[in-house]
Length: 242
Length: 398
Image (cartoon, rainbow over all chains, first blue to last red; front, side):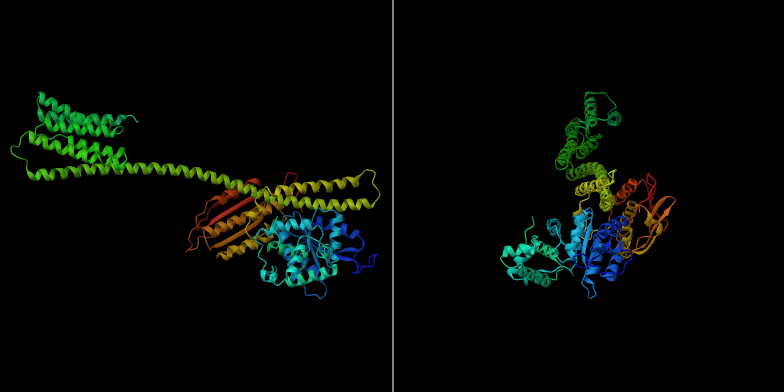
C-alpha cells in the first residue's frame, strides 16, 4: 500500500486511471475491512474515510472520488441525506462521484430513499470481496449497477408504499407524459433490468441507439441512473407490481 | 326465586302485632265479628313477608283481604289496611318491571276505595254517602297509591342502575388489564426490533472484517494450521447469521407500521424529538453529558425511546410548558430525566390511555433498570429512569 502518496492517478496495468474511493461508515471495523479489500487491488484506492454523513460530504467535495461507499445508517447526518447533498449540491466541474449504498438489510426503507436520492445501487455489507470490487468497477465505469434482481426486489417492495416526501427528486406524471410511446417502452425494459445490449436485441435497433435513448429519457425525467428509472416505472404503474 | 329475608319476617311480625294491638283498641271484645275482623286485618299484613319474592300474589292477597275488611268492619273503625295495600303496590313497582307493574295501581286503588265505601255503607252512616266523599275519596286514594308506586319504581331504577354500573366497572377493569398486557407485548416487540438492529450491525461488521482478513491471509502461503480456512469460516457463519436475522426482521415490529418518517433512535437525533415538542409550544432544555455517548448502543436507544415517550406525554398532558431533558452517567448507570412544568393555562387535556408508561416500564425492566414517575411540587411531572451499565463480561463496545 502507498503510505500517504500524493499521486492521485496511479495508472493501472491496462492504462486506466485508478478508481478513487471514499469509504463512509460509523463502524471502524467496517471501514478498515473495506480499506483492506480495496487497497489490495491494483487500480483501486481508498483516498479518505468518514465516520458520519457530514464527514462523507466533506471528503467527497475535497477529494473528488470516483465512487463513494456510503453506509446508509449513520448517526447525525445519515447516508441518505449525505447522498442527497453530494449529488444535488455538487459545485465542482469534475464529474460527480457515484454513490454505492452499504447496508445490513436489503428491504430497508432508508436504502430505497437513498436510491430515490440518486445512489447508483446498493451492496449488502456481508457481500464477498469479489462482489464489492465488481460493483465499484462497474459503477465507476458508468454502467448500471449489477444484480438488478436484488434491486428490483427492493423497488417492488417499496413502490407499493407511499414514497418518502422528497419532492425535489420525484418526477411527476407530467414528466412521464412528455415521453413518446417508444420511449416508454424503452423505460419499461430498463426497469426490468435489461442491459442496453439486451434492449437493442428486443427492439431490433443498435446498442448505441438504445444508449442515447436511455440518456435522453433520464435527462428528460431528471433522473441520475437506471435504478431511479426503475423506481419511477414501478411507482407510476408503468409496470405491474408482482 | 329468592327466599324471604329474615328481616322482612321480623318487620312484618312487628306490624302484625301492632295491628292486633290496634284491633283490640277498636273492639275490646271477642265476638265472631271481632275475630273475623282480626283475621282479615292480619291477612292484610302477614302476606307482606313474601313481598320481596312474590309481589303480585301478595298484592292480590292484601287487596282481597282489605276488601274483606271493608265488608266485615263497621264504618267507625279505621284499619291500617289501606297503608298495607300501598306498601304492596310499592312492592310490585319495586320488584317487577315497569310497564306491567302499573297494573298494581288500579288494583290497589280500587281495593282501598271499595273497602272504604263498603264499610261506610255497611255500618254507621244512615242515608246516601256524602257525594263529596265519593268524588274526593278515590282521588286521594289514587294519589297515595300512586306515590307508593312511584317510590317503588324509582327504587327499582336506582337498584338496576347501580347493578349496571358495577358490571361496567368490572368490565372496564378487565379491559384495562387486557390493554396493559397488549401494550407490554407491543413494547417488547419494539425493544426486540431495536436490539435486533444493533445485533445485525455488529454481525455485519464481523462479516466485513472476516472477509478482509481471509483475503489477506490468502495472500500469504497456505498456513499449516489452517487459520486461513478458519477465518473464512467466520465470514460464512456471519453470513448465515445475517440471513437468519433478516428473516427475523419480518417477525418483529411491523416495519410498515411506522409513520411516513422512520425515526432512527439515535441520541444524535434528539434534536428531532425536541423540534416536535417545540412545535407544540414547549420551551425545551436538553443536556446530554459526553460520557453518555460512550454507553452501549442498546442503552442509548433505550434512553432515546424513554425521552420520546416522555415528550409525547408532556405535549399530550401539559401542552406548551417548560421541559428539561437530562442524560448523564452516574455511579455505573445511565440516568435519563425528563421534567416538565405545570400545564399550560389554556391547554385542553387530551385523554391518555396510560399505556405509554406501561411500555416505558417494560423497556426499562428489560435492561434491569428502574423507573420513577411522579408529580412535582409546582404541578409539573417528572420521569426518571436509571439504566445500569455494565454487562456480564464487564466490557463496553466501541
